[in-house]
Structures are given as structure tokens and as C-alpha cells.
Length: 229
Image (cartoon, rainbow, N blue to C red; front, side, top):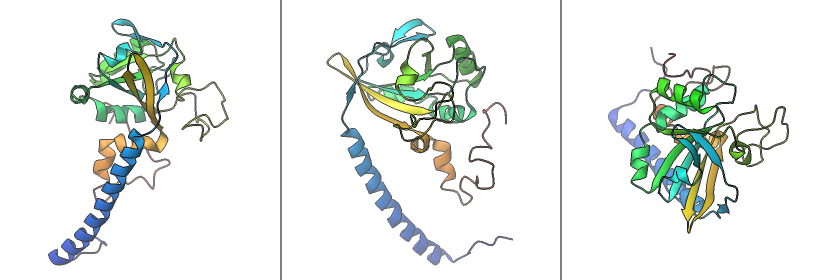
């Protein structure tokens, strides 16, 4: 039998209206934060990055595919790994298929990892994903954008130099803009900053049980690749 408080319809509506007021306040704050994010200064990308792609060698500029903006998911897949990170795979399930919509807002979406391109392609096909995935194995992209680290790195190099990395690979997401032939980094987010991008978590957050992870050894201990449940 449930131990949760049970009320009448009128009491439920009163409580829900109070919650709605709080949610509207949060929505306004979120919109203000988005405005501040868009107003951040840009950093010019000076280095010429060349990636391995299914179609051959491509530059960072090529990844824009003729559009003005580019979003990159920094996916954890190390050079000697045979499978992608289960948590990054969880996030990627939320991204699959959105590239066609982003393209109609002048934005391309690409996944980048240090794994060899043949392994990335094999894993992408296994997962049934259709987005573009390229390898940064032969360039410094992952290191320069704070998602890959030398072995035993202990300095706070992750999450805008605020956290020590917990391994050689870490997750993140970066946004770029192309203007007058130059490429600029406009935003990057890591760690819990990625939380808002996981639709499955946002759906669980509106249920009565929520994410239900408190009793686990770590928050995402339950997550499996979607073909392994």
C-alpha cells in the first residue's frame, strides 16, 4: 500500500498550481541563462584539425557541411576500445535522428571520438545510429577541447579546468560558429552540464519515482547499451 500523501482533486490542483508557479520561474531563469550563453565571447580555432571519416579525410570546416553552426558530441571511445562508453551511448540514443531537424536551423551535428574509424563505424551500425561520426585519433582535437588526457593526469584539466579527469577519456559537447571563413568555439559543456541534453532523464524527472538511482553504487550503474538490456 502506498505511503505517499493522497488528496482530493481540488487539493491536487492547488498543489499542482503552486508547482507550476515554481516551474514558470525556472523557465524564465533558464531563458535568461540561454541568453547569457549566447552572449559569451567566441574563441577563434587556429589549428587545422583533420579527421578520419567514413568518406575519407575531412577537416573541422568540412564537418559544418556548408552550414553556419556545428555541434560536436565528445563521445568516450578510446583508441584501444572495442565498444563505446555505455553512458555516452545512452546520451547518443537521445541524439539519433535530430540532425535533420538541426540542419533546418543552419546547424550540423557530428560525433567525435579517438577510436579508429573502422571501430566507430562498426559500433554506430550495431547501435543503429544514423548521425555522422568521425575519428580524432590522428590529431589533438580531443586533448585541446578537454575530453582526452595523458595517462595518470591529476591536474584539474576537465570541465574548464575545474575537475581532475577520472580517466583518459571524458564526455562533453561543444558548439562552433563559422563566420567570414573563420571557425570559432562558442560554447562547451561537460560533466553535469550534459544532463539537460538527455531526454530520457528529463522524462524520468517528471515521474513520481524520478531517476531512482540513490540506492545504486553510482548514479548510472543501471545504464546498459540499448542492445544489452
